[in-house]
Amino acid sequence: MPIRLQFCFVKAVFFIVGPTGTGKSKLAADVAQEIGAEIVSADAFQIYDGLDLLTAKPDATTFAKALHHLIGVVPLHEEMSAEKFRRAAARTIDEIHSRSKLAVVVGGSGLYVKALTHGLSSVPESDPTLRAKLNATGIEDLRSQLIALDPRSARKIDAQNRRRLVRAVEICLLTGKAASTQRTQWRSAAGVADTDRARSMTRGTFVFRDRDELYARINHRVKAMFENGVIEEVRAIGAISSTASKMIGLSEVRELLAGRMSILQCVATIQQATRRYAKRQLTWFRRQTNFEPLNLSLFSHNEAVKWILRRAQRSFAAQQ
Image (cartoon, rainbow, N blue to C red):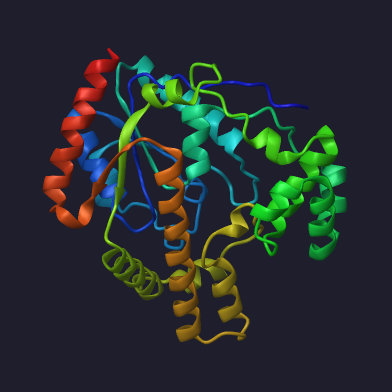
């Protein structure tokens, strides 16, 4: 069944986006507390119920400052997608607005954010029979198929990323068209194919830090994760979906539990994977949004809150 083009009503919404480890959650909570707003998370893994340490969910103090939505609401065994998130976020934002409240969208999952700001292209949903067949296909065969069906996507997709290879081939086979041509069919939140207009309708801040500081924060957070019990957290989980299983650190901790990796190797590998993910997030947000950038390395926490608060207040006033 094709996805119908649907769009999120983004009036009275302010975005705070950026890579993992920047401190978005605490900043957003303080901003939301000041203006009486509620937070809508745009994090592909914090949306799952469980694995709070592994996904770096906000702490109790942060949660207490503002009402948070779409954190810990999806069972680990359930598949998620940008479209499912878009529908859930749209309903949540509408419900917040119905109570005359403001919404602050916070997150680092670029595709989820873009699903809200630009809508989604009309690519088909997964076909269970075809998906099972493709999942049973070797990764080299998948790549060969994609090269034949869509050379452009084949050049861009990581040759070792099975999930993305499967999805790209699946789209090609279901639609008879190259996946790359369909992925570019983003629409604005108003339902018009006008990227500039879509960007003008969505306001927000893109937060980041100097590389050395960001990497140090990431390294520290991973160490703290282990000190606080992430190994037992992973040991205790049951069934988990293929999308949830992509959480950074999950496979590494499982390797540790199986005795195939030392704890020092596990920590170092997760730190490296998280740093690489942050680098990809930086690239995404710099290219995909026009949100006003803010280098948090140049400000204290309180100064950054005031900086964002002024822009959020202006944004909300302009949208009334």
